[in-house]
Length: 366
Image (cartoon, rainbow, N blue to C red; front, side):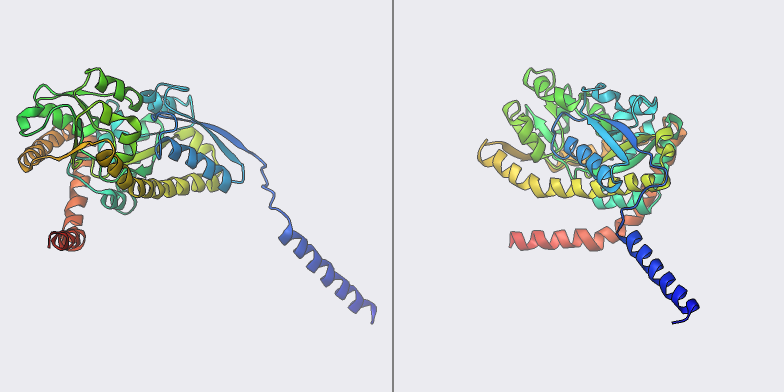
């Protein structure tokens, strides 16, 4: 072998060995920088899907970032009051938080449209609006003045109508009723003559038991069983006209979010979307068994709102939502966008989901 061929052969072998070593070696991040964040939530400690979902979000971010971004999660009251979450994130006291946007109606009336609208979208519809209909861009615009960036991080599915200590047989039964109910649904109850009380999750049972409130809504059977509402109220009403597909949020301090490298921003965005799907699946998978336990073991009286009451609530909802939309230009902008997308989605829902559910109902009744 001549000298030139020998050098070429050795060079190729060295390059191949180097390539193999490179492929098998762990990737070393050039910057070598890690981030330690704190998340505060509005949820009680260990609350299934809500608080555990926030903790799952943090764990998945750490896994996918290979430890470059670690998030310590604090339940409501552990670091800041539950309803202080938005301010803590906005002011940069912490980097992120978990809650629901209707808690921040006092900051911006428009925030309420991004959690739940009475007689509005189900989970499919609101996710379609966020991801494919411009809803998320509007949400970002609403939170921008507060230095906060929002992402959908969960959905409860269609909720229950709530726990009551008296029967609701006519719309007049709401008069004088003290009810824990947030968001636009609360505005409707107020228009019906009720007194609306906003309480964090950990305060509801005691208030119901002691008569501070006469009724409450929360989410659905999975949580309601755990929270023991059946021990403090007689009647469990459905359907959840006020929250037909409630979105949960993760919010980031703008400066903290933008300080992250682009790949870490992409990771927290992707994990938020993943958690959004995961939470809905968890509620759907577990609510049925919990409802059976409430009815069969605890003898809960499951009651459907009368059609006349639902019709009256629908009319009051339209009035209340228009009034809220008139409070500022941003609320009006969001409301009109919501209505436009709902009108676009409606015809398809009529020939797809509604037609299918009607078919199922006919088979069951046969």
